[in-house]
Amino acid sequence: MADELILVYETELPLSITVADGTGIEKGTILKSADPNTASAAAALGDVVAGVAAGEKIANDGRTQIAFYRKGRFKAKISGNVTNGDPLVISGPTANNLLQTAGVNAEQIFGTALETGTNGETILVELNPTVMQLA
Image (cartoon, rainbow, N blue to C red; front, side, top):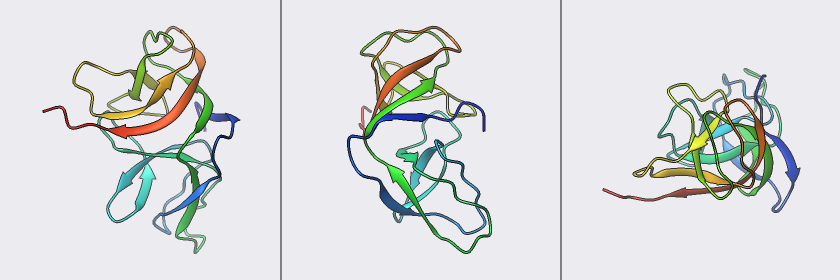
């Protein structure tokens, strides 16, 4: 997969979350959270971030769990200009694992930029999923 996130510093051990057996998810994919404690590949601005896949899930392999990181520092490709300290969200309308600076009313935060970069660059980011209800 292009643009997968690459783990640089593991700050917490991976957790486990439910996924559909028919779903294929590559290592380093940003995961979207759904109820009940279920994940799939994130695809759009506004997706609630579960974390980042710690391993690969092959479609139709009989497994319905995947290990994922909820915290950590990763190298990630960005969309647009990002400044060190900016809160980050999944870039939309299709994520392809790109992150962008959160807008004023962003509610589904991926984490924080730890470096400054321009469109298409790969920078160090901190995964710290947060959901805020601003409206």
